[in-house]
Image (cartoon, rainbow, N blue to C red; front, side):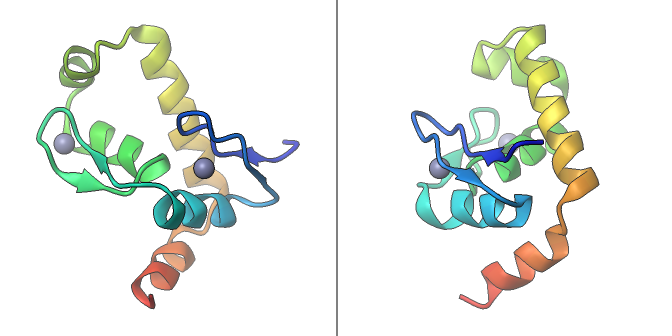
Length: 97
Ligand SMILES: [Zn+2]
Ligand SMILES: [Zn+2]
């Protein structure tokens, strides 16, 4: 993969590794408020993980006015991150702040 693009809003920053990307999303973007339960999470991957782990796909689609392509894209992102990123290291770093 050529790089890890942030893709939150208009952000087009690209990182060499997924760890840097998740850290960027967590520290340089505003928190994301879940539209299903109003919980605040980090934006980007963490918000996707929250939505899909805590809520059903149907809840996500309703709350975000999404369609199945939106769901598939997010599922792919989640899968790639979980396959390739050392999330433990990322969260350990975030707790150090
Ligand atoms: Zn960004
Ligand atoms: Zn939620």
